[in-house]
Image (cartoon, rainbow, N blue to C red; front, side):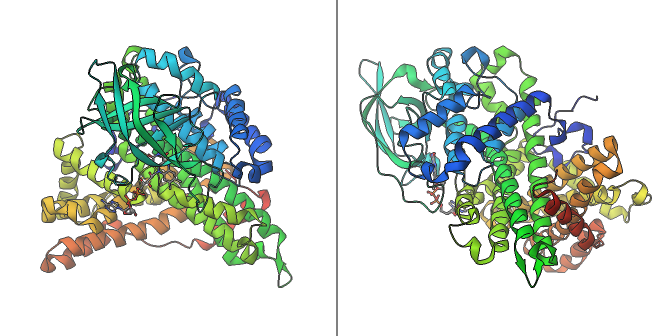
Length: 597
Ligand SMILES: Cc1cc2nc3c(=O)[nH]c(=O)nc-3n(C[C@H](O)[C@H](O)[C@H](O)COP(=O)(O)OP(=O)(O)OC[C@H]3O[C@@H](n4cnc5c(N)ncnc54)[C@H](O)[C@@H]3O)c2cc1C
């Protein structure tokens, strides 16, 4: 098999990527399958049957669950074997994350995600040898639970505005931490807190704080809309003594830990919501196949089929991008030697590489889950609005995903901001690619359209290429016309980020479907191809519309008609009939009563 090429972050917008360059969910190994199944069995046996018990927030029950997960190796796919972990690849981590979220209640998934992700990974990637030895085995076993303390009353999205302080003692042996963190997942249960504080009120720094250190206390549980079985509390540090050995990485470098760990947290959130989407689809299909109105199963109605098909299609795109992303990060990490993997500064740079893709996975995934649970509830009619059916809880539980790990607004700023910053620094050849599109437009119609129907999905492949060109054209105009002002025109930033997100989704699904078609041919690939055809059809129209809005805002009036025409010309878009394709997919979902891929 051809080795996957390693691409830089954001490069997908300008590179021609082959199916062989990405990992697809169909390529899970036996080992992947085993860990996924272990996690799924755990959820089905220990979590799913008694979601109400979880919502009682009984600490001893939670501890038992974490320890059971530890025995199965589910807390430590990211922890190297040398420190008591499983040391698995990022695909395994994503599979465990997805499986744990494949329940009709997401509380444990959130608690587990905070523990294994943002709570544990700062030590894995930024800890000293001594810190790893002291803490990782305890976290892997589930005997210790971790939490991540970044947010404060005046530092939410603006996390660097933290007011928690750390002052070095006169004898230089410890820091005194003072401040309040809020909304901390696992706040009431955690044995270990990753805390960010400003040394001397200035240098943003990460600390490992044990629950038993003097001066740590958590406040009352928040009364929440959803994930009611997770703990969310303030955590207060009052003259809390933290030994200097517990400084993470370096004083003044806390932002590198905080934001890079969030990057990983974001793509893992993408994996988690895929589990939720699959569950929502399964519940929706089951109900639609059972409920009768007008003397017929509601699953036979076209509008219900459309809902099921769309839930399935969007889940397919989310799944495709998350596993592509997980393997890409693994490939990048594998270019480093074991010694280099212990280098915290290098780890920061490595993880930062895919900041754009991590934010995409988070935004696309959380919005797909919200779409799925909304349609799930609608398919249940009045029953969906009652606590008798799981739709109600799933609807409430899903909503948090658009808020934590950076709100979706902040993640959209990260996507566009990182792209432009890298272009300006010469890290991403965006300006050359923009110039290439301009020159192509000057030359007039391209002749590459011939033979578009030669292979299945060739048309979709062409639409992907033209979507990239349209994005480049719009981004180039926005950058040229608005200059430094672009940063302040958030509606434009949002439109550009949305285009980037859609392009990554289209490309991930398309490359996956092409891979299946190439390997297994028609019958196996038909459903993949149907999903991609519908999604591309709907998305290209949206990309065109968003690009036109950017250009209409940024460009001078006189040049507008020519540029709007150029966008249509680049797109060369002709809608296809998606109704039969949606019905084809919906029928499969209804027959199997689950996500069919
Ligand atoms: C259940 C739950 C669990 C959580 N778990 C944790 C945890 O374990 N650890 C932790 O540290 N934090 C945690 N959080 C906090 C969470 O990460 C923050 O709530 C989130 O980052 C948003 O911050 P905020 O609530 O202060 O909202 P704000 O920052 O006040 O934002 C309010 C609104 O303004 C928008 N906004 C803000 N800035 C901008 C901007 N520049 N441009 C455009 N729009 C903007 C936001 O997108 C949002 O829509 C949790 C929160 C909840 C509710």
